[in-house]
Image (cartoon, rainbow, N blue to C red; front, side, top):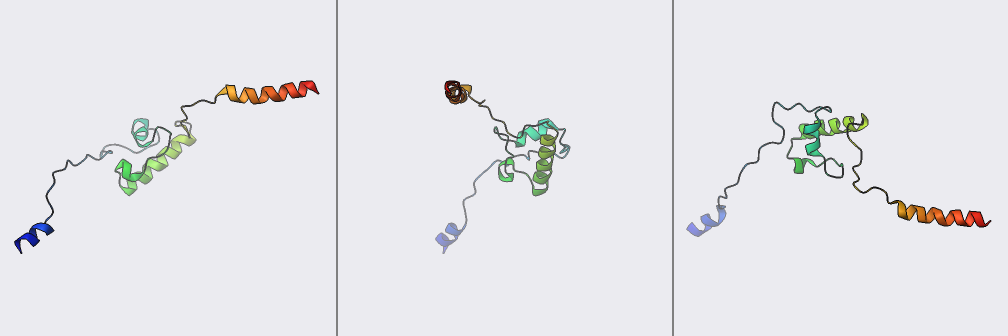
Length: 103
């Protein structure tokens, strides 16, 4: 019986409780770029609630603030680090130009 109780009782693991990412004094607003930028990935996507460790209400407010900032051009819709390579596109159009000249 004593072994059975020991199996049911889970071992107590010490864990450090993480602090909430939004403090009570922080105002969730589209103008607060330092706060909003913490919840956007490198590609410009809105991070999930599980990753952000936010409540449902906070996640909704963050999402609305990010979308407002995007509409007002405070944030980009996409954050593409790679710029379009011109070498490939000019090769395609160069072939078309030579064909048109031959006609």
